[in-house]
Length: 149
Image 1 (cartoon, helix red, strand yellow):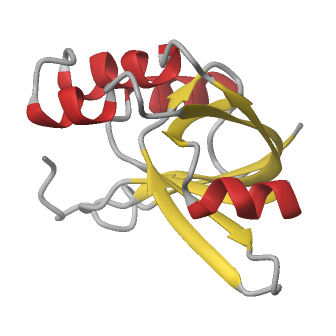
Image 2: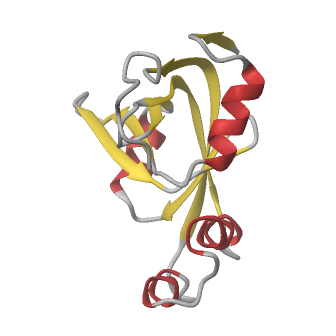
């Protein structure tokens, strides 16, 4: 994996493991049009997401598994990681990845959203993105007066 930008790999891992913001995934539709979707993610050297098996993204990735992605702060000072890689989609009958993402983002599955997405009849998939390239940016030095949250 090629890494460019101001952060070393350990800083990338720290940022992505701590981030509770969505990953934005860019792909191509079968017609060749660009498409972008935001999903919860986990990081272990690869990006892991979950979505319904009937999501348009699943169809698009079956057509072309090359993706771009970005995980970045929404508030100043802006910083983040973008990259490209290859996506693999696998069935997740037990909804293991989705449950792990609920824990990561909401601290558990006890919510209306959790009950709706974890219904037994709902088919779920695990999307794994193997990065080929990562690029980081950090505008903290350019925005010294920006309020931090």
